[in-house]
Each structure stands twice: as structure tokens, then as C-alpha cells.
Image 1: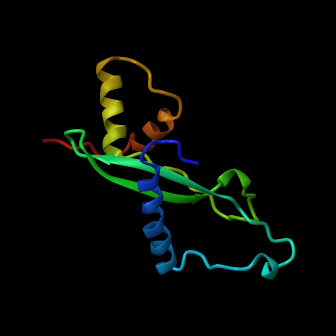
Image 2 (image 1 turned 90 degrees about the vertical axis):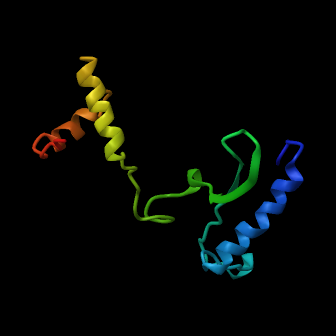
Length: 124
């Protein structure tokens, strides 16, 4: 549970998070006795964050509820995986810096480099 001094304020932000998910029909409430045979319940994890203004002043508190992914099993609880995608501007910056500094790229970047070898270059 929360140990910070403002934990009561964080708990208040949980209500709009749950209401928003209910409104989007992300889940439905069920009694444990009505679950199908062999069904598993997955734990939920709350993630809390303090949003701040550029000055450092507290803007708002946010709560987010997520499923505990460590309990999920492929083919039972999920069927697809997600691979994060690098923003092109970030990838391009790393390529430019490695060229200027004449250094090697981190592991995995060479695969992306091969993808863009034949890409037309932007000229200003």
C-alpha cells in the first residue's frame, strides 16, 4: 500500500480511473462463484505518479490500474505481443551522432540501419 504522506489524495484519484474503465467497458464485475471452471483471476497493480509543471510545482496526481503481467500465460490470457517502436527522429539522431563520433551503435541498431540504407535522404 501507499506509504507517502499524500496517500489519501492518491486513493481519491483511483475512483475516476475505475469509472473511466467502466465507461469504456474494459471489464465487468463478476462473482467468483460464477467464473467458468479453470478460469484464473489476475491481480491488479496500481501505478501512481505526481505530474509537475515545468517549475516543479505539483500539477496533479494520477493513478493507473494495470494487470499484473507476470501472472499471464501466452495463449491463455493473451494472444499477441507488442514490440515497442523507436521514433524515427530518435533513431536518426543516434545514427548521426555515431557517424560524427565515429563510434559503433548499440546492439540492435545495425538491424534498423540496414532497413534505412536504401531510404532516400532528406536534403535541405
